[in-house]
Length: 349
Image 1 (cartoon, helix red, strand yellow):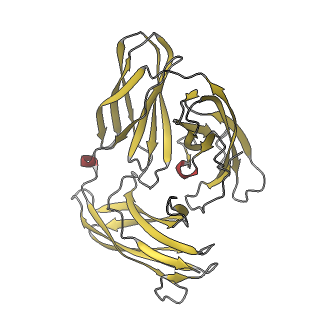
Image 2 (tube, rainbow, N blue to C red):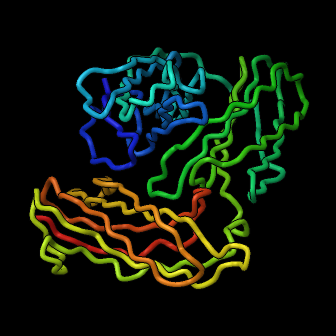
Image 3 (cartoon, rainbow, N blue to C red):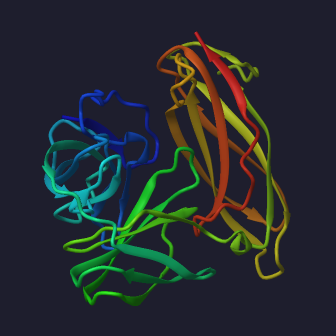
């Protein structure tokens, strides 16, 4: 069983997971994301990986426990499956589990992998590609599905959106139902909606009753970045006495401070609401392992015209090690309006 606690509040610390190498199927903890949808339901999304190089898997079952802020016992328990019915050897699939009710008390979620079965392979008889991607006030996407083999039924195209963090988090999974598809045909499809997340791009893939497709990674056009320039600078960390430091102590409170300057804005955009994010990663002891995210928090503010804004976010280190701080600024449409800020290196003893 793989168990992970993910707070909805955006601030979190890294958790231990049972990702033993003997497991054929694993949850990728770095990709998991929790959000409230437009109807108030809590949704957990992420990625499943099939580590077996020879065997496909099916009936991948996932359980989400939804908690309030105290996290003693779950308010709701919901089970779901991977997006793909069959995950190919060394393949992956998204998953999306929605709470049973729009309970406003839900603030955290845990995700566990319940089980899976081996499966016959599905051939890659489907091909998907994009023909147009537009991002302005709405997100508009057009694509084509090609079926080069036998007739298909229950054919679906999926878009798994991801954000700008590294590694990226899966933000939302959208299903486009195509139904029956004749052999040796092409089917066009479209998707149009307002992006509710900080979307850098999305994985495009498809599955039918007999075929699957490869994953296609599509990045949002750079030309769609809003017409304003924000610069992040002077990222530092201070102790409770206001002294700057790069050597911290476990269980002591510190303040991460930064300045952001908006240098250009259109005349129609005198006031710019923004969200400033701080992400703290711990360097691994093993050089071959990726860094782990230890903390993520945000600060909401507003630029009035041009000028400089200051941000402060507090952090209490929970374990010693070598860490680095990453900073980001997005507008309220969840689109980056600044290059990532300078790295700040710190040591916790």
